[in-house]
Image 1 (cartoon, rainbow, N blue to C red):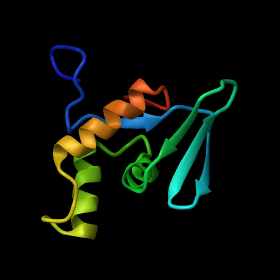
Image 2 (tube, one colour):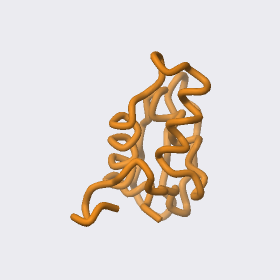
Image 3 (cartoon, rainbow, N blue to C red):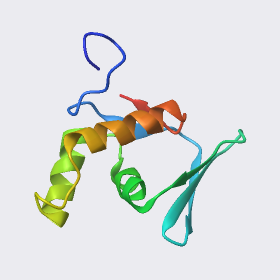
Image 4 (cartoon, rainbow, N blue to C red):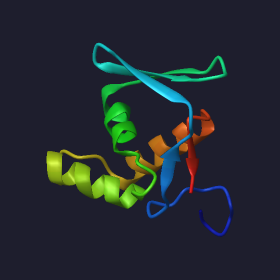
Length: 97
């Protein structure tokens, strides 16, 4: 986290919170958080990022993997990754480590 305390940096590590169950729904991924009524629908791009969250990878490592897979011009930007990770945190399905 940056010195301001509220902005996720690309080098920060984010991990899924415990109790998340994921189910495929066509091209989307649906996440349920056990013990709550939280249900989150992820589009295909966000689903790829979610699947790469393992609690050890930084946003930068995820960006590198996606650029390797899709190419520099076709892959996401650092802002895409941090924005998605910040959204995961705001939704209560992930936490910054």
